[in-house]
Image (cartoon, rainbow, N blue to C red; front, side):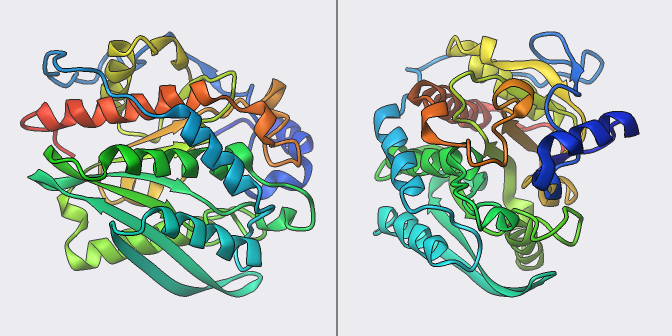
Length: 335
């Protein structure tokens, strides 16, 4: 992912900070625009929200954190590597018996042709349509020669989706189906651009657009860099405002609102963008302030010791509560 629409001076400073990591985003944290706590857009129409009823959702954060450790134990997992295939197998092993769609294809990149493997686990509901929750699981390709394991960037969110699968599995859902997507090849191979990034999720959006699946998607929720022990989820101006308002309401109902939307980051380019461009309501749940001035992002310092099970609990529970609210909103706001 990357942030766009920043002044050139700040951009140059940020690129100097991240060094070899410039291929993914155009800035580091600390250059975004502060915003009041809570929903930032006071002019857009607010969605009509259902009352807060029923028990709050919960996840097993200890188990989710163990998944992070096990993913990271495979080492760096850039696309095309043996470690990448190990993580593919790891995810699929945890989804054994579930309804899984394997979207496998070969893509052209500036570094040559590479296999890409999107993994989609489908949990049926009683209502027509689905809510998609996504995370990328690959690590940065240009850093493949280092010890970079992406514990937070890709590892934390991919582990969280495995725990969400545990919570969804075997339960009758009185609401929309939930599809969990582990998308592949999110990272740029050389330099972030529309062509060199988001290979897996772009392919999936195109495929679902062609076969009619896309028009059935009610909301797209993305988790990225959500394991930071000092969790502060940013409001993203490329996300759908009403859907982020629902996320904030979900966090508030669970008492987690202090971890959400204290600031706004402008123009986040992340896995949600191919769906945003196709009119799907989308929200990027990302904490793009990982260490002082984002110093741990895209470095070998992105390790498990910087993360917290509590952060996984906060984001996972908020996502499930967001789904619960969306299930009761009838009709949903227009796309």
